[in-house]
Structure formats: C-alpha cells, structure tokens
Image 1 (tube, helix red, strand yellow):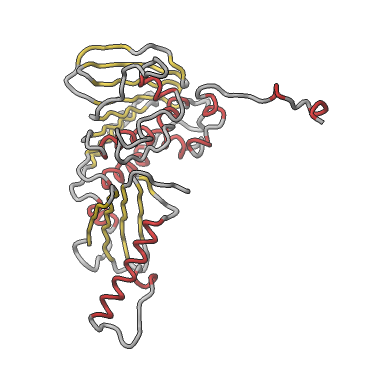
Image 2 (spheres, one colour; image 1 turned 90 degrees about the horizontal axis):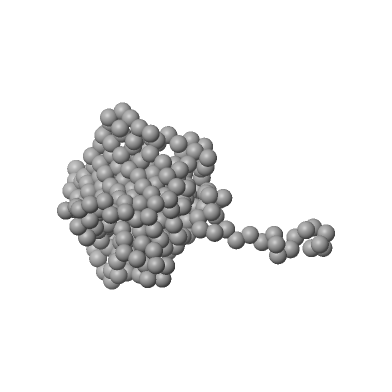
Amino acid sequence: MSEATGYDASQIQVLEGLEAVRRRPSMYIGSTDSLGLHHLVYEVVDNSVDEALGGFCSEINVTINPGGSVSVRDDGRGIPVDNHPQFNRPALEIVLTVLHAGGKFDHESYGVSGGLHGVGVSVVNALSEWMEVQVRRNGRIYWQRFERGKVVSDLEDRGSSDHTGTTIAFKPDNSIFEETEFSFDTLSSRLRELAFLNRGLKITIKDERSDKENIFQYAGGILSFVQYLNTNKEVLHEQPVYFSRSKNGTQVEVALQYNNSYAENIFSYANNINTREGGTHLMGFRAALTRTVNDYARNNKLFKNEMKLGGEDLREGLVAVISVKLPDPQFEG
C-alpha cells in the first residue's frame, strides 16, 4: 500500500525555526484577515503589560507609522541581551526566533502574566516582513533586525542610555495577510481596555498617518471601566460597587453598577485576557451575587414566605467587570 501511494519516511517533513508559523499562521494568531493583523500588535503590547503587572513598567506607547509598520515602546526592564547559556546566542535573539522561549514558565521573573507559552512575539517576528528591536538596559542601547523571522544582523551596541525598556517595530508581511492596513479605532479599543484593567498604567496610541492620538490612563481602574460602559445610560446608583481581595497569589477585582435597561453586560478577564467563553471566575460571581442578595433579603424579611430571586432577575440591567490575576491560569477557549 505504502509503495502504491508513494507515502514513506521521506514524505515526513520537519519544519525548522519559525517556518511552521509561516506555513500555518492562523493556528497561531487565529486568522490572516484584519483580526489576525491587529492581533500582532496585541501580542507585542501584552509583553509590555506583563512588565507593568510585575511593577516594572508605567508607560506604553504605540505608534502607527506611515509606511505600514507599528512601533511599541515601554519603560520596562528591557529584554535580556546577555548570551543564553544553552544556545550561546543573545537571549533577545532566542526570544524572537525560537518558539516556546520566554521568561514566564516559572514565577521568578513574572509572578503573573498574560503571555503563557513563549510564542507571542516570535510569531509576530515570523509573520513580519521585518522587525527591529531596540533594548535599553544596563546603561546601553542594543539593536537587532530580523526579516520574516530570520536574523539579518548581529546584536549591536548603539550607545548609552539613562533609561530602560524595549521598543519593537515591525511591518506585517503582505504575502501572509489579506490586508495590512491598521485601524486606529480597533487598536484604541483594546488599549483602552488594557488601561482600565491595569490601574494607573499610561497607554498612548498615535497615528502618524493622520495625527490622531489617544491617551488612556485610569486611576479608578475597572471602576472607571464600569462607568465608561454605562455612559449615556440611566444608572440606578451613582457610584459603582467595587471590591478586591488577594489570597494565595491570586488577585480578584469586581466592579458593578445597575442601569434601568433589561440587558446584562458582564465582562470577565484573567490576566488581562478577555474570557469571552466564561470560566470559574464568572460562574462564581454569578452564583455569589444571587446567593448574597437572596440572603440579605431573607435576613431582613424583604420577601414574603419562601420567595427568592433567580439569577436572571438579578442580572437585568447589570454592568459588571470581573478581573482575576493568577499565577497559573488554565485557558480552555
């Protein structure tokens, strides 16, 4: 049979480096349409946000450049540039060219992070016509360039710097993507969300093609998020209800506010990632809300007989944001 069909060991291919990403890009970024294109920016920004989660970054700047590229700059620690002991190449190069290479598999460099698999920025590199990285670290400025995931220059020392952080600029490969035009509004929506979820973090986006600019920074965090979601709606109580709790390395924040509509609008996040399919954090919130309100009403004799409210009743007109940050989330979606 194998001789007849011409299928033998010689037909088994092993793709080297980032070639697998270029062959099957949708497996890594979901699609090669506009959604996948913008996902490239989110992957880079998420690394900067992870620096902020660790307390090492206070500002992230995103710039859409006229030539079709995007730059993401942060004031974090900067990607390590010293030689990796196993590969004897700069760690920066390894992070950008090797799948599943990163500092988030243990809890030493990052206690909590959204980047969980060491794939994100190397995938962006693989799907970019070119990528240039500047690292400010150890009082120096380091620079390196890549094209379609391959190293095209050695790591260069380009002078001194009094600051730290990383700047990644890349241009999506038009042979991979159906369209390569970035939307200012689409990127702004996600960056606004990240600023809400990370209280005090300043995120700016500037479009050099049109001089549009947005600055997102919210001292109220997800409390401000709920107020934003209720803009132009008639709320039933002026101030949202907010509480937070930390236990065993897990942080939970909840903000909620009712309006006079019948719609339920609940957003849940784990390590800044929108968990659209729900999860234990969302189920727990819904169950606790129903139980708490019913217990209060029963203890204060607000109900007649054995009456009680159902969960759907209590979620009418509810706007809520649930944000959990934990060391080892398990994503099924």
